[in-house]
Length: 318
Ligand SMILES: NC(=O)c1ccc[n+]([C@@H]2O[C@H](COP(=O)([O-])OP(=O)(O)OC[C@H]3O[C@@H](n4cnc5c(N)ncnc54)[C@H](O)[C@@H]3O)[C@@H](O)[C@H]2O)c1
Image (cartoon, rainbow, N blue to C red; front, side, top):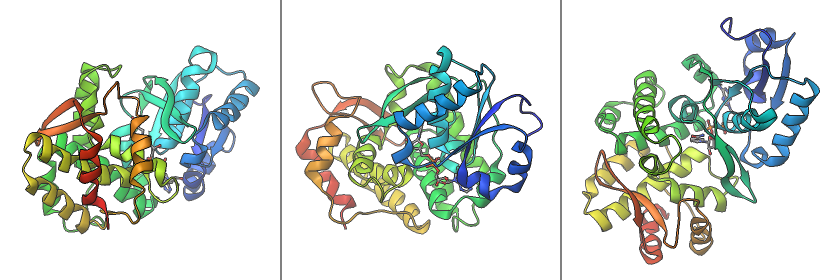
């Protein structure tokens, strides 16, 4: 904390603030905006509340976000747009944010229930990763972060899947090497296509289905849970369209089961889900997915027929 600028403004996830007395002590004489981090608050209205806070302080000083992906995405968006941009510092406190959302510069909010529909790109000026924050992270959100780590295991060349297979349980897992692997892959991809025009699509593996699932189960699934289910479904699509070996899906599912992650949903409203998938930003006249021809070989912008999606969804139905 001593490395943070003393005159910064802080946006802090309320749960993190309440879990860490040292943080409350550090910020007691500072300007702090407490955020109730939930998808339903990741909105333009909440951004406007944050603008009010910034306006009140007439600031061009750095904005420090302390929290998970929701806090980072919303604060990043406010910092990118307030006065056409003020400095941004990120301190991720969830596994997902540490290994993924903190890097890459994407920020934004949900709009009319559709994920991340309003947003922009903003590189943080500094990022500080302190895995100790994970000691207070609820287990459900630790599992949620594993969704993105599994994605990196599938799209990247790092041996993440075989390493995860040897882990006994989530409770005993040393997260640091996985955070480093995720960051390494993401930084490499983003450095080649920061504005997401082409290659960055590889990071979208699992996400078309995930974003649809989050829209149809807004309260019941976290982002990472939806990603994990999206991976299973899009692995199935990869088998159908690219002949990917089905044992990759078996291996992925068995890791998820060992970690107690969600692998299926009840009463999936398939048509409603498809309607949301059709709204995905990445589509043109066709539904565009990132699929895999091999582990470590993502195939971007693949057109997938609705009928194939309907039948692939069976792999996540209870
Ligand atoms: N910008 C990107 O590139 C990118 C990438 C992936 C995901 N995302 C976004 O990230 C969001 C999900 O973020 P997330 O999974 O990090 O979780 P989150 O921000 O939703 O936080 C999860 C929960 O954990 C609590 N929490 C956070 N850290 C804690 C801690 N250390 N101790 C106790 N409680 C803590 C929060 O209050 C919240 O209730 C989604 O909105 C998703 O769209 C963005």
